[in-house]
Every structure is written in C-alpha cells, then in structure tokens.
Length: 269
Image 1: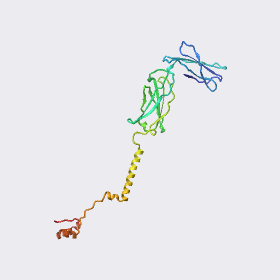
Image 2: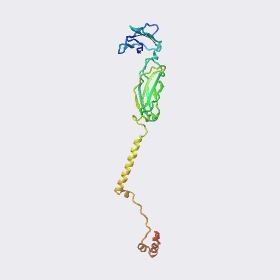
Image 3: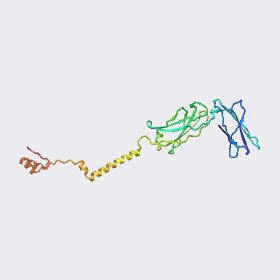
C-alpha cells in the first residue's frame, strides 16, 4: 500500500514530514519504515510492504507530522479510513473487442481486476470511454456496474466507423479511479463490415460492362454477329412474268402483271 501527500504552500524550506500509522485502537503507532522522497529529499509518501490478512472490517489510522527549525508545522490526522473503500484498483483486465456478424455490431468484454478484499462484483463501477477517430465531437462516457461476466454492446452504427475504447474502474462508493486500460480500436477500416463494400460492387459492375463492350467489338470485327444471329429474309411479293407464265399459264401471268403495283402476287391453280 502507498500513502502520499504534497508539501504545503506555506511550508518552510527545511520542512520534513513523518507519517505514523496504526490499524486498531489497541495498537501503538509506528513510523513509516519506507519513505518516498522528492528531489529535495523531503518525505512525500510511504510504502507499506506488509498489511497482514485482509478483512473487510480493517480500518487505518494515520498521523502526519511536520518539523522545521524555523517555525512550528501543524500536524494532520485523519478519521479512521475504511480499508476496502480506499483501495485503488488495477485497470480492467483482458479487455477484448469482437465483431458479431448476426447482430452487425461489436461486443466489448473484460474481466474484473484482482483486489485485496473479497467483495461482490456489483461493487465495481466501470467507465467506458468510446470515441470515434474521425474527429467527431467528444462523446459522453458509459458507466456500468460490475458483473461476474462483463460485456457491453455499442450501437451497431459504431461498427461502420473506426472507434477507440478504453476502460477504468473504481469502488462504487468512492472516487479513486484506476489507471486507464490500454486503448483498443474497432470498426471500419480496421475491421470490415459484414455487407459487401460499395467499392467492390463498383469494380464488379465495371468489369462486367467492359467485358460486354469488348465482346461486342470482337463479334462485329470478325463478322461473328451475323453468323450467330443471321438476318431474317423478307418475303418478296414480286413474281416475274416469265416465271409465272412458265409455271401457271397465261391467266396467272396476267394476274401477276397486274399485281406489281400492290407488291402482292396471286397464284391460281
């Protein structure tokens, strides 16, 4: 456990601090055995290596005393601190983001961090910071209570844009937040959307159109078009008089001659 403080604004130049602690009203106070110091050698913190077995009934008592050769320094004591309420947790563990094709959206999952005291998962309070990378206005954070299995489903629209996500955690009834987890990215362009991209559709349609144009050009150039699709012959109504007179006699020939103006031929048996 670490306990830290800062030098007071009116503290003399030669000030030095001493921290005393005890863990029950029946114990004697003991001075910090492992101070943390600043660049001037002033005590600004204490590291406690051994805290004993954790109990939810643990209370911590502290007294911070200041000394100086110039002036008297006011001491500072604290009301008993409930141990499990002042613990600063590690960041959320094993944060992952996966795409769910059936819902066309992503799911964010993470594990509860390890902590000193055995408390219900619901006493965790999580903050999810999800932002778009496109420069959109900053979005409000998402707050969730802890569960045995934690997950969050962002809106499906987030899967069509690139986003970042990071998490932090605290005890539900204090304001001592953990550090942020590492930042993850999800959504387009890092992960593809389940529908066919518009660019792919354009390429396919363009290729099909180009192939059709080339095929028509080749067919025309090598006269394949006429071979594949020969023209339908027109019915001619004209019958020469020689053919008609030779085949059906003078009567049919006369009718054929009269019919040239109407382009229709009448054959008599």
